[in-house]
Amino acid sequence: MISTSIFPVRTLLGLSRPFISATSPNSNAPQVIGPLWGEMSKIFFQLSLSRDANPVGVGAMWRNEDFEEDGSMIYFAGYEVHEVPEDLGGLEVLALEPSNYALVEHQGPMSELPVTITNFYSKLLPESNLERRVGMDLEIYHESEDPQLPPRVVIAAPIS
Image (cartoon, rainbow, N blue to C red; front, side, top):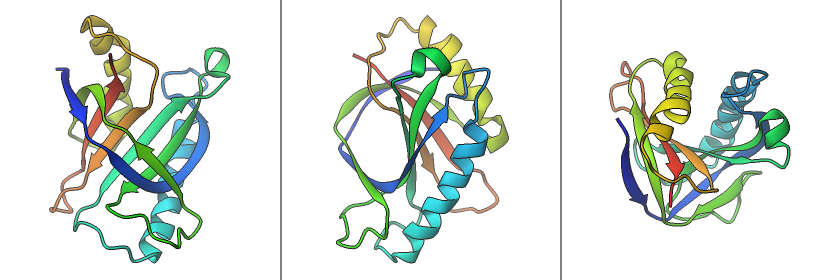
């Protein structure tokens, strides 16, 4: 079920890479996004930043110039921070402005996340009568205090 929410300002520290959307037949999302999170996390945690016990990971995606041809997008994998350190250690800063989003929550194995994403964009969002706008789509990962439980992931699309 889709809900809507206005997300607050968020400052992310992470890395970005081009990829082909998971909704495209020639997607390379699994080969790009997982390794990007691993590379970014290694650098992030080496910086020993002050952070919440269970950091909020945010994947931000936006269309690349070739989106209509091949589904090209940019993926930013990062953790939310309260302050940007002087030494970024090679990481990038992405500031997200407050914005209105349509969202759906995924709880379950990460291997099933692509099914939730595809269902959200191909079925639920079009049927919602919400007007999608150009902007960054988000995947917000809330890590569980129980390491046996998978993270809760909120998929969010910008709306007017």
